[in-house]
Length: 102
Image (cartoon, rainbow, N blue to C red):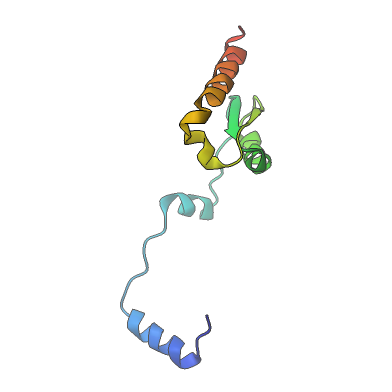
């Protein structure tokens, strides 16, 4: 999509006097330099194998107790498929047993 300078000027004239939307409060916090502290917790991360690396890196920064990965399914929407409920239930049960030490 290309615009000419005249098109850009027309758009600018139409937008004149319209205030920009306020920034998202969470984005504003990050922009202002807020960095959440590390937390004394462990995370059990249930995600697809493709998502695990990226999400694990994020959570490992915040979770001082570490992150345990549970690679499940092929895509994000598989988590709500009724026929895959037994696999998810088993992973959750195993995670709970691990945490409870049983």
